[in-house]
Image 1 (spheres, rainbow, N blue to C red):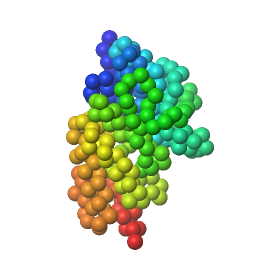
Image 2: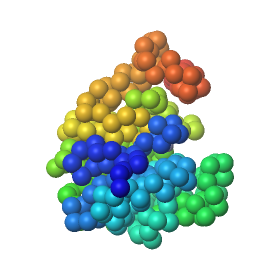
Image 3: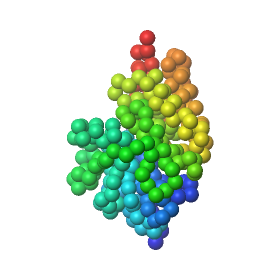
Image 4: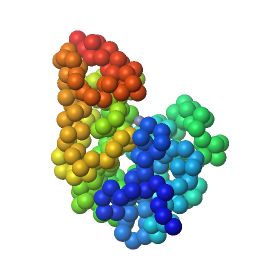
Length: 255
Ligand SMILES: [Zn+2]
């Protein structure tokens, strides 16, 4: 048996990359046969491949974690089992209030059984992941989505960033979120980024130079807020064209 999707990003940390929007799913091994699956994504065959890969690794899923409320980060597969799926209290509360709206886009991608089990999250008991592995701290901020969490493992220096610090996606403030507000959320990740050796973004590629991602995002925001033309190479990607226009609009609204 060989792995179909997971690739090792660091000792005990495995990442699968979806065919859609370079979306990553992260698996953390607890060292005693258990695995925590973060943001499994995205198509039904890709979701099914994750528990199959865990079996190849000889581990079983003991918990899930959703970094934030967006539909592509709260998915699950029955073969991962009926285990606690953690997220921030704010994410759990908002999903329970606005489940239909938040998950509506899934109708395009998933079968009804997979939509039914999407977003079934429970709040983390405190600021860290309750698991048998090494300390894993949750860093909560409100950039990109309310009560978004990143997970930082100090021993291995692994930072799972959710939808922040991507090499393929520009900073994406949601709704009427300002660029300054987004920058404040980014700043909340600064200490973890500086301590990290490996960064796993929710969309994009794993890097061993986390500070460069942080600097790229901060420089982009600073340039827009100062009215300068950004030379960020992500702007050239047609996938980012609409987002960049929106961000320019937000920058112009600054008094
Ligand atoms: Zn998102």
